[in-house]
Amino acid sequence: MKAIMVMYDSLNRHMLPAYGCSWTHAPNFARLAERTATFDRSYVCSMPCMPARRDFHTGRPNFLHRAWGPVEPFDVSVPEILKRNGIYTHLATDHYHYFEEGGATYHTRYQSWESFRGQEGDPWFGQVKPAPPPANALGRNAATDRWHLQDWVNRRAMPHEHQMPQARTFAAGLDFIQRNAESDNWFLQIETFDPHEPFFSHRKYKDLFAGHYEKWRSTLNRIWDWPPYEKVSQESELVEHMRYEYASLLAMCDAQLGCILDSMDQHNLWDDTMLIVWTDHGFLLGEHDCWAKCWMPFYEEVAHTPFFVWDPRSRQAGVRRSSLVQPSIDLGPTLLDFFGQPPAEHMTGRALTRTIAEDEPVREYGIFGMFGAHVNLTDGRYVYMRGAGNDENQPLFEYTLMPTRMRRTMDVEELQKAELASPFSFTAGCPLLRIPVEGRWGGHKPGLETLLFDLETDPKQEKPLEDAKLADTFDRELVRLFKEVDAPACQYERLGLPV
Image 1 (cartoon, rainbow, N blue to C red):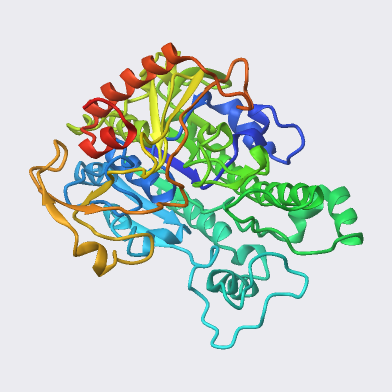
Image 2 (cartoon, one colour; image 1 turned 60 degrees about the vertical axis):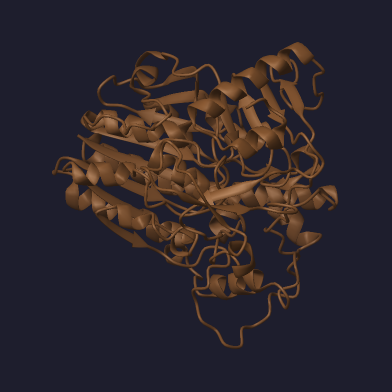
């Protein structure tokens, strides 16, 4: 048995034909839906990038105990379990956060791995005196923003599509398939940073939307493909253009996906190979008057994700699944089950084998969020966003043995306040550093408002409900799930929940 997992970053459900979109160019995503089970109630768990990947490795939520960080020494990693049990594991990725201090322990869990540089502001292509961005580029001032400046250095090093990180990543994945199609017992993870911002794509994909781009070039003719993480302040023409920039990059993602489907056909892999296509989260392109993610409540555009699976055992193709699933914690147990391995002891995700086969439910509620922000709960119809119980959003502590942020270690001043805390149930007897988190965190303001939405009557989440009885039901379920994942006491107190 073999498995191929294709993972995207910031792939929007509402921009795909399988979920009702008719204006983007994604024929291979439509083709994918014809060959797989398509999930209609797939939700995130831990947000954003590396927290979701730690979820995948460990099969349990990450965001209640710490923010962005690496695989911890006590974590039980799914790729490593497979590797130790005779399943060859390989990672091909252009997701550069794996190779910063806040993510540098993931790739070594695989038997082999390869990476491709140049996404976003990845400090890749060295240029001592870089040329400034084009005069018609909109966005943050590159002279003071090194990530935008580096992005333009990187772009100039890839004038052709085959030089782009996504194209190189998929080419590497296809090469692995070509060389190993006749072998058995392997897992391949093809992971691209796209369609994460900036939405940089070449002319051939923009020409798929010629009407828009001809009008754009004859009027504003600006470069505008990297949205800020803030409220929308731009005129409607810029908002519309950003959506087309996203759609153009999505079309490139679709083309590369088509190569994987072609390879499945060419090597008759549908008979013995699981195919998984998913994303860590979505992205706001002006909906709710917001750009991006991580700072607003996690509306459906961010939290409700596309998810497709082909399982050669049940051979369910062209079907819909309505059960509530959370790929970031469920895929680990699912892969272990596929390869005949039991789940690790403290995994709270569920194997989706029977869900794929016959839509058998695996949970009644799904918990999701980002460290220090709302803790969200959904049953697939209602979404409950539990805010802080006090204006200071306190107390809040990170629990870790790997004191890193995204790109570097934590500050000495933070670590001077750390204390040693008792082990949690899942830390293999290891005590942890307990590090206080003060002030704003991740762009979140203190005093997060508690919100409740009914997706059946209010799918765009424009009218929060006032229903104390229903909110109380969700609070009780939150407490139950907190116990299940051994959440720290500070999270109960921060949210005003009974311990």
